[in-house]
Length: 377
Image (tube, rainbow, N blue to C red; front, side):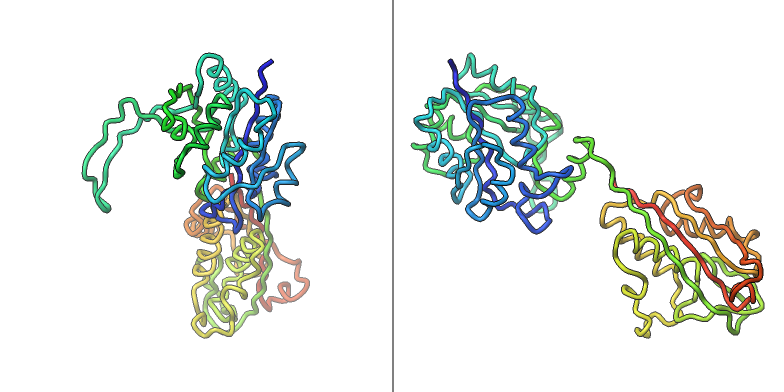
């Protein structure tokens, strides 16, 4: 009976993906990246599963092991793989698949293709044919082209006869890019099986969003609300949602006192859990004296974009007896839409009165309510 093992290598220190910890332990669709990779092999079924981890990550590895053998990795990927292979010595393993934990979307079908290739080959690995034009560059300019005929982008899992790859690693001087290089240096032929475009390697922060989409993970939907009030004072107009509206009085505030835009800005900050306008633009700072509120709203919208969110829609309600908002509502919606970078059909500005009750009913000032929905795919 043929006995097969799978090794998932999760001993790296990859921090380029951000998040403050090695990428294999960051959450993807609710669980660590390494857990997705390990789970794919558990689904197929192997005689032995090995999870290679950094000595500092024992707790993280134990949390997802689920019966897998835990092995401490070395200073390089090749050393980590060899440690896992040595740990299997004497276990009667005939074939082994070696996979990078940073590829959490490996499919059972791909695993099956590599295993099937080992029925007739000593070694096999998935690859994607290079279809794009390839350039060589000198600095930031193109210096030449590279023929892509016969070129493949390497993937994992890479499969081998166990005794073959163990011997190859024992003889290898180190510094290999992957286990195919180790095997070929030892003189072995490696078969190529079709890889999968979705079998991506998590490297940069943007890869997380792509992997979430491929996994069909739920969108991150945030809602926020804002409220603001400004009193009437001297003046001949008010700024409301970015539009100058003639009135017998102005609104009093440190900036231009655009109560509608302030409420909407706070709604966005609230959805991001980033406080309010005062946190980002303190009223004690003289540089914001008389500042147009477009500055605040633009900043909030940029913060949302930087965190991967788009504004799905927003709704602003102005509460006042006067001035009349209806004649200016469309212009206000267009102004807000332009600042947020969305269609005007996703922006609502409306008004109501307080039936002559309270400070707005006594025409002492204007209040505004706002709500917003942010969506990250």
